[in-house]
Image (cartoon, helix red, strand yellow):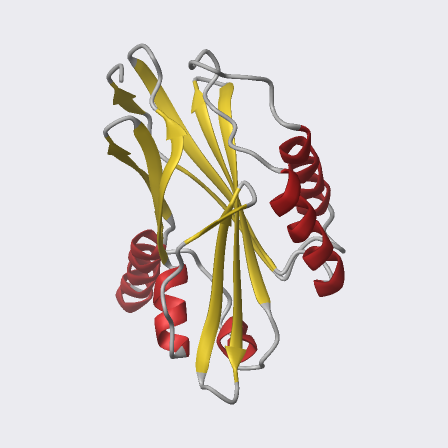
Length: 210
């Protein structure tokens, strides 16, 4: 009985250690996130070597209480070049291409995915606030051809969505609204949605006025 209890405790501790975590990264006028410990399926390691494109979608939400202040739509695309033996990596935020790391091995790609730093996603609020971050993550959510069409459309039409009340703030762009509806549709459908999904929420944190 004692051994069984010890085993259960070890399993519980392991689950706690491996739990995903999202924390804010605050730099000057901006709020970014660090997402660590995503429980990606082990099958992804094989898929990353396949030469096909694998995509991770993240919808990062900035909340004040239960009110959504802003969303950021993030797409990561990884394709292994079997000839050059290196990854082609793409990172886009709200349709804008950002710098992605050079990755040569599956281990390097895996390490990047389970410790993501996404900076300058949101503007700091104009007044002090208590905020929360939430990340919804999908792996390969829809067929590759359709995902490519959506990615190109969002890239051409999306724009940054500032915090409500920030200078120059406007209502959510049409493209981001469409992206969010697509995300919600596939996240809700167990049969069509994704190879894998996860949701993680930060503890509330305080920010001073910018």
